[in-house]
Image (cartoon, rainbow, N blue to C red; front, side, top):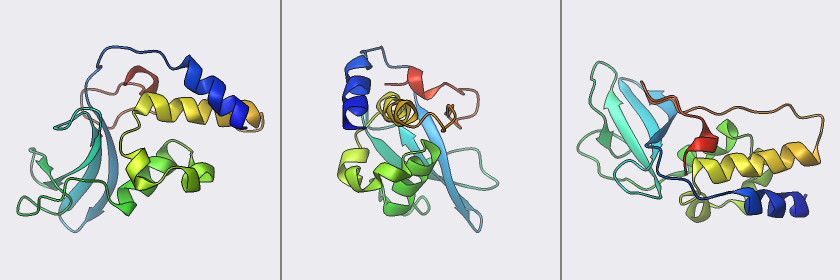
Length: 139
């Protein structure tokens, strides 16, 4: 599998910024949580939240009073699950995963799919309203 991952990494080609990429994390009461790629900090995942009745997203993991932008373990797990990378969790600590683009993450998933033909092809799209781009197109 290491060779397949290395080949996948070689295939990742530089593309222009295709905007933001958002994944829902969870909902706690009236607060919705997400993690965003390329939102306020380019080249990083960060946390965001909004009131369930609101339309504006705020940086942070709790509400507009909290400014904890960096990924937490809950967001890390949500990314790993969404990209089908649970089997690589020990190789993708929070610090490393936090700077891996959706395109890089889906390339790792493709390497796993190549190594295990029983796995189906996983398609990952952004949850951002009006911008449902594929992970392959977001670097």
